[in-house]
Amino acid sequence: MEALILEPSLYTVKAILILDNDGDRLFAKYYDDTYPSVKEQKAFEKNIFNKTHRTDSEIALLEGLTVVYKSSIDLYFYVIGSSYENELMLMAVLNCLFDSLSQMLSSVRVLSTLKMLSWTSFFMLERRKGKNVEKRALLENMEGLFLAVDEIVDGGVILESDPQQVVHRVALRGEDVPLTEQTVSQVLQSAKEQIKWSLLR
Image (cartoon, rainbow, N blue to C red):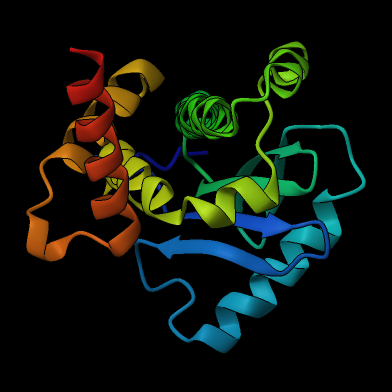
């Protein structure tokens, strides 16, 4: 029997998904035409959620695709590749995404706690802080998610698997936004930072 030899390809990732604990889409980025319509994508997402949300494993083969996944509190993270794709590479992407978001969102929680100036809250947060990502925090910081995914995968090609590098690049990209393209909250935050530093001098 002759084995099928496939040409190596850089296009490793077919999709990245984040679903909530009801299986509803919070984030989805498809890199090919395996599921061309939104209706097909949502049906696939429901199927994948139904097959994976009650299991403790990390890898599944579904509809001819390799699916690696991880859950955290009320979110499910998925990285999808073809059936012949290396699971370790897909898992590296998943871990990079999860760890990057965990680091970015934990720093956001610390900053928001410091703004409230409640030391009790700060110490409780520090005790609770770990590698978790919550739906509410993710929804409040979707721009960071979009930037992180773009730093990790571009067009299905894996660009980065080190979460420290991703967090650093996202921070740099966030600082380089021109004033005309910043949101009101970004402008207010920048003004608060400038006032704070001018008062401390």
